[in-house]
Image (cartoon, rainbow, N blue to C red):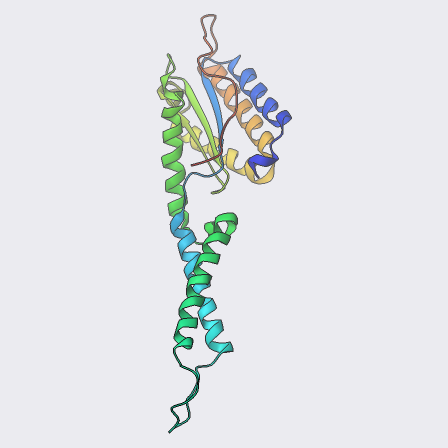
Length: 225
């Protein structure tokens, strides 16, 4: 999945799903998709270090250390060999950092799962507050957060929704959302989950005549960290 693969039709379909769901409930649903939840510079450094060490070993194998004949003081200086090893490490490190920056798989490979989960949790909570999902009058905000780099999703709710659905139900919704993201398109996963949340909340927090649409019915896209 990539933000670049999202068409205007996909966005409109998600926006329509939000509007349809909110027509049945007093809750406010905000779908958010982020390219990444963290920078993971350490993973790039680790990848660079491994490639640098690999380059050094390659130089050591391909160019064995020179041996000066006993009793000979002529010939080229032997200083070039340790210098070549140092240069190979530096060049390998730089190339590894650059490659891992543009290849998400490598950064995921060198980033512990616990760290990725922590970054998604921190960023989703930040988005929950920054986009005023928790500021609705009836405390009925629902955030559906997807972070593409980490391949993880989160659902956060305000107090009224939490009391209406219970944490166990929200956790199950998040599990189903994650499964849809794995098996379906981003548009389908969002639309189906939003529809399911709208149906559940229509019973617990039904729409009233005084409902105000406090938050935009639009997909929020976060391209950077």
